[in-house]
Amino acid sequence: MLPGSIQMSGETLSGAEVKGVCEGLAEGSVRLLSLRGCHVSDRDFARLCQGVAQSPSLVQLNLNLGIVSSASRVQQLAQSLHSNRSLQSLFLHGNPLTDTGLSLLNPALSAHPSLLSLDLGDCLLGDEAISLICGLLPPDGAKPGLRELTLSANPGITRTGWARLAIAVAHSSQVRTLNLDYNPLGDQMAAMLAVCVASSRTLENLDLEGTGLSNQSAQILLDMIQNYPTPLRTLVLSENNISMELQQQIADLLSEGEDEDEGEKHGQEPPIREKRHKSFLGMAPHRVLLTSGLGDGLLAETEM
Image (cartoon, rainbow, N blue to C red; front, side, top):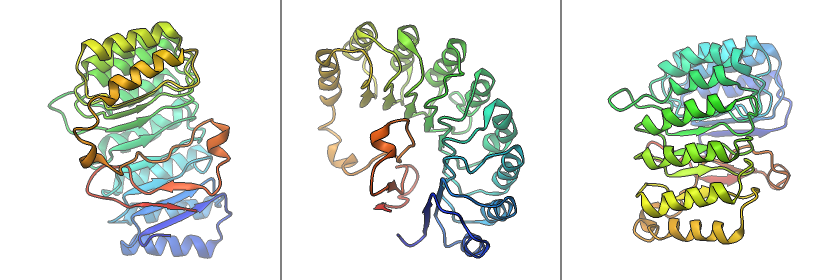
């Protein structure tokens, strides 16, 4: 474990352990707190939220896989985010937030001065949540918004919601990474996303793994990359009904510009995300990336 980080996965935390975590947060000695899939009592969760609120140093908070399991915990987390000023990355993947929970969190997310990366994958979100998320992607001239957004595995979002998000991303001045994997987007939404990518000046990474795309979508994306210069570097199309030939053509086009900035970007990776992928969720040892690649150098990569 690196100095400045506390990482636990699938454990039941005792009151003494939670007390130690809270002391580290209050002292400003913790930059990353990862409690992925851990079990804590309601009382201890409230204490953890107080620690987050008081922390002057916390940069990355991982509460993935069911920790934020009730409306009261959502409210407590929201209150802590209202007071916190240092957090840059918040991972809530696999928590049953629903649109109602996100509406409770939204005022704190919107007002937070430092938040750059947000993972809301597999959170049972719908179109009402998308309307709130679009507010976190302000247009040019507004305050800086999210640079990394993960909405994996939220099948309750309709085409109307995805269309609204695509428009917001196209108009946003900040979004660099957009993860929409394991959503039933289909070819119609892929065409709209191609327009979104062509319009964006900042979008570098787009994950469309397992989104129900066909060769029709791939051809549209290929034509977009060939004919319209974009910052796009990575386009994930695996687990779709797309020929390997088309996938290779797209990969070749995207790799043409990589040599120019390879030295500048070498060694950087996005944060590890929870995905509905057996080979990922079953990995051992559990690999944790302690940086989102945002802000001034956060933390390095390690293993648990």
